[in-house]
Amino acid sequence: MILSPSLLSADFGHLAQELEALAAAGLSWLHLDVMDGAFVPNITFGPPVIAALRKQSKLFFDVHLMVQEPGRYIDDFVACGADLLVIHAEAETHLERALSKIQALGVKAGLAFNPGTDLAALEWLAPCVDLVLLMSVNPGFSGQKFLPQTFRKVERCRDMLQTLNPHTLIAIDGGVTPENTGQLVQAGADVLVSGSAFFNYKPYAQRYAQFMAASPAKSNKTLGWSRTQI
Image (tube, rainbow, N blue to C red; front, side, top):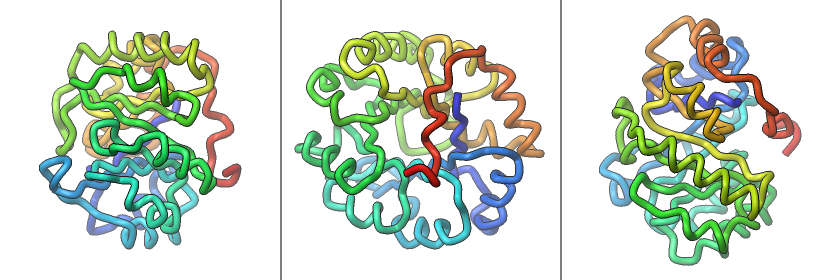
């Protein structure tokens, strides 16, 4: 299991130091939520901030584009240092084109689904998807309550991918805590995104250990996913 702390809950006055603290605590991924105020009711940051952070860190940048028509911005986010670009099934008309472009640029491609969105599109898109991100809250704000129907959705997603593309990872974003980590991993999740449930509990090394201790032993398919190997 990989834990990807969401930068949205970090101390924005000391971002460089926050990234250093994550690396020192043993974490390898960082989740960056890009919101445009249109697809979701919030505005966060864009390529300039990510580019500045990229100069300060070797963490794997897991960039989640919660924006309308994300295909317009793929080049910008690849150029600023993203390692994984996740776009929403609900936000892009030409999903196959956008996902294939991300991969062609040498970056991992992710496809996100909101809580109320069916997974049917995976039947046609799985070959060009490296990671499926299942939202376990309605996107837009940190600190929301986990939706319990997510467990069943993870199981269904894993069943589908087992046939369509078994190497595709499953990530969960929203309301993830040590308390539900075990059940999520058992259901088939590989990557867990946690914001306030991680950053609000220092020291980070201790909180990271709590998440990892809650995860049952399983094959770790994410071993090859690091910045130095992409």
